[in-house]
Image (cartoon, rainbow, N blue to C red; front, side, top):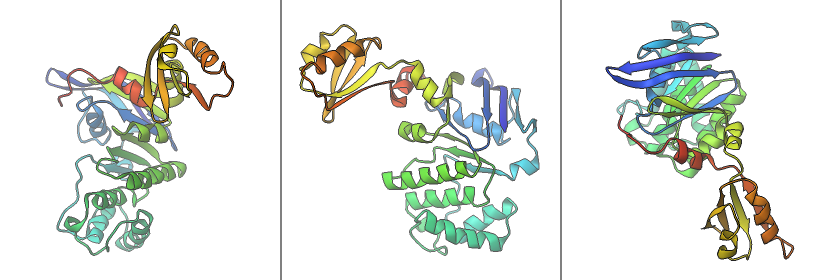
Length: 300
């Protein structure tokens, strides 16, 4: 278990992280979200002991993180750290040996991971010859090849196409099932929703929301409806509590001022019987992000 208590980091007069509290258990994933400069990378750097907190503590199973613990941390930085003139094999072996793995084991596991992540190329290819997506997959291999207990992933999906994004998400899910503690940051709200057990939102270093993903969404009420119906927009907008109606694919997306308005919407669209689609649900994580986090100063 990793626990952050009252964690604060100041740079001069600026508070980068303000009194953060978080607990990460084995086999769980926390999504850390916020705009650029919200404090996500600063939090990761403190967890990695790259920088020291101004106040507060970080513990691993109730003790301060030791050098031995650090051997069990895998870190994928936002700014990728591959050496361009090394081969894939040289690069991965270098990082693996830093974490105590033998060269022979690293070579063997690298072949498995190259296939698993569908990396295009040979282990002898230079890093500089790889596409951005394949370089990112090699960086992930270097991060997870030692099967660390704690994974810290800073924007793991940046620059990946949908196919490779799904590959990356599948591996994060598999590592979670194997018991790893995982915390990651992302601006891909769909990915955060699919992967996270818990969520922590930051704005200007302050925790805006924290808790289970389902509970957070439900706390905003079932204030949105997706429906497919022939009832005109004007008739829907005339219903008290319907704030807006927007086209959304084959159907329409309604925003409500209160959950109860959904009952009248349903009565209206079902008055002639069959309704192909009617779904009243909480706002998406993307919508919550825009409400709670977006806006204000985004400078680092």
